[in-house]
Image (cartoon, rainbow, N blue to C red; front, side):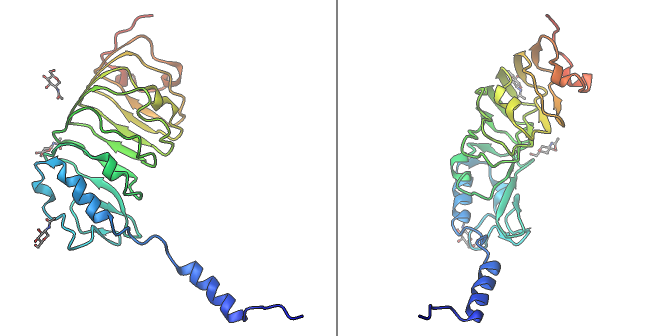
Length: 226
Ligand SMILES: *[C@@H]1O[C@H](CO)[C@@H](O)[C@H](O)[C@H]1NC(C)=O
Ligand SMILES: *[C@@H]1O[C@H](CO)[C@@H](O)[C@H](O)[C@H]1NC(C)=O
Ligand SMILES: *[C@@H]1O[C@H](CO)[C@@H](O)[C@H](O)[C@H]1NC(C)=O
């Protein structure tokens, strides 16, 4: 009995098609998601070229100001710095753009609580320095963000304790919390290649063992007690 065997050229064609077929085509809903994200921001004059008549990315090159593109033409991040932006950072909508890995809102006029990052687990960088964010950050705000390398929250008005979930991020290399109102003791950090800046907060107690090799300036303004 002869069993069916596809001609070899068909097998070859199937293999070639599966090798070259890239599923990494930019998600066609991403432009609308970015426009929706923009709609909850205020003072968006710098984002006037965000218009879905052109795609946000053309390969690596961005068509929309402040969008970072990857080489598949997907939105890799947002670099919205020094733009005078305020309003709400709609991370629920940004989380639907699954290719996003980095978010910078450095030096704008955002106020209120830290944006909710719990749906943005793949982020590698979060840059919120030089805004007017305030309030406490929940201890588990960064839980499960296992790719997070850089967290910059300096020069805001954050209060309360340093969130302990930061101590559990396996690849964290850069943590900047300086010039805020963080208080209490510094939790221990054991990440090997981590650099921290905790200067000019209301922290107290002793420097934990895992941070004993940091630049002493990173603890300026700390009140020592034991
Ligand atoms: C995009 O540009 C077109 C033509 O200039 C304009 O009519 C439309 O309102 C713009 N859309 C947005 C979202 O700005
Ligand atoms: C912050 O952004 C403003 C524009 O909104 C700019 O004039 C200023 O130079 C920026 N500051 C820094 C330190 O980059
Ligand atoms: C922090 O809050 C104080 C008053 O509560 C205010 O004077 C100061 O300007 C704020 N700092 C920043 C960076 O927003």
